[in-house]
Image (cartoon, rainbow, N blue to C red; front, side, top):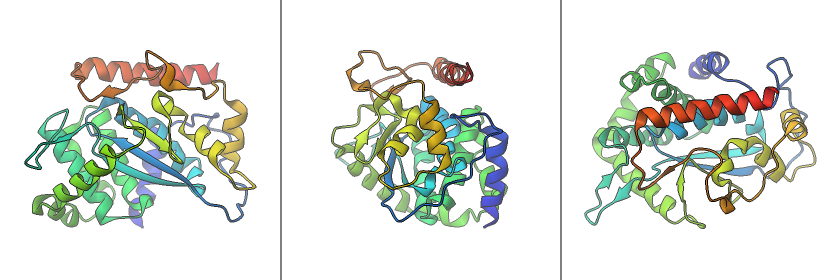
Length: 266
């Protein structure tokens, strides 16, 4: 698929390996039959910490070939709420509701994560760089037909799918506290969501691991503890009732990403 080739160009332009230098090989060790680790990502558009996670961390699951042992599912609903009339209101207003629905429709149109993630990554990348008005460019950049997605969200199908995501999100046990909310094999990562690769690799029950897993686990400087016991989250999150300045949130998100990468390089 042509969109995948263009996607590869994007990821080389905008991503950094979180476990090693860019000169390390991402070749994987041949895998025997084993059940994939189930990864669920609950997020919302226009949340700066969700954008940062998708653009700078979740992308590594694909670039580092960790998707060979992980089944990734995305739920673009986040902290939205459904009122008694079945109407959805979003934390960041109508634009968030639109983009959540667009991404939901992309998932419905291209069910394989390797087909819809490039589009979602592209949209979130524009949001991350403050260019929310450019998201429709992703169709052309990835050589995708926009009609099925646009028909989905204009026909009301996208809203029905969002209501299904609302049910799934609101039924989580333990309940979601904030976004991004990442669950690996049923276990929430809480505010340690940036260590998604480490956790996937630790959860995998197969006899052999991708080389990126061996590298990540060997180079991990931060033990995965019990982040839900911390009074103050280690990494930025957006609570349902939070109404912070988008500019300050964006700065905090960017600073967190920079500090994390500098610590890895130290």
